[in-house]
Image (tube, helix red, strand yellow):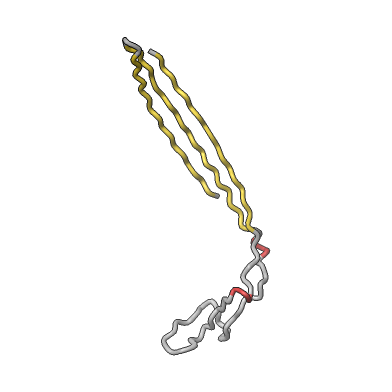
Length: 105
């Protein structure tokens, strides 16, 4: 009878940055005014000036680039036994277990 076991630990870490260019006039974004354009439309509390606003493409640089850090920890184990029987017969029993944990910051 032979026993075997293999354990694998792996850590994968990825950092990414996305520069913030902000919206531009080419995006077609319009911030509606606080006063309804037509009866029955809701008021917009984020634009109290009464005129439709269009972004001019300025980036919000004071907030910096969008960053994301992803860490993936994985553990894998394989355990088993090989049994030799008469007449060159073999029985191989094994068990595999794997677990991964992902964290985003």
